[in-house]
Image (cartoon, rainbow, N blue to C red; front, side, top):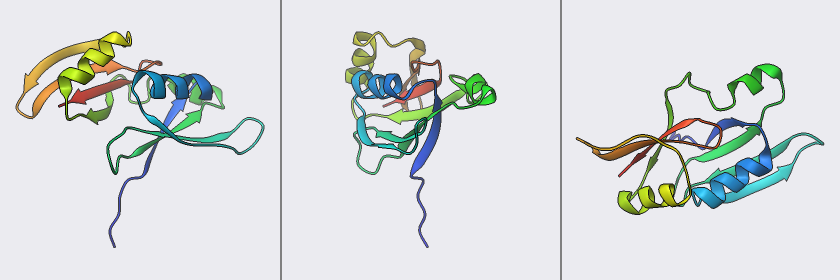
Length: 127
């Protein structure tokens, strides 16, 4: 039976600011935004690539969850965004005022840089 990874939960401080950042800054699509209760929504965003895994934007509800916003992996790169045009997307990160933490650099597997999302989670852009 084939399997595939569909969603990755990303703990966020606020649904609407996270939706705006991912759709306006990174150009992700809003796939779904369903109200589940007075405080909980099912929010999915995804990059434009066909078959891309979707991010489930999960609003922190407890103090422990709030402490993880922006640091889900203890300061390591958390997510890896592959691109067919590194230079275009690098220029977009700069134009959008997104913090580039490291790079760009040339590696065996291509160009790479590390950027931070609106909460400080680290991403690799790889092309």
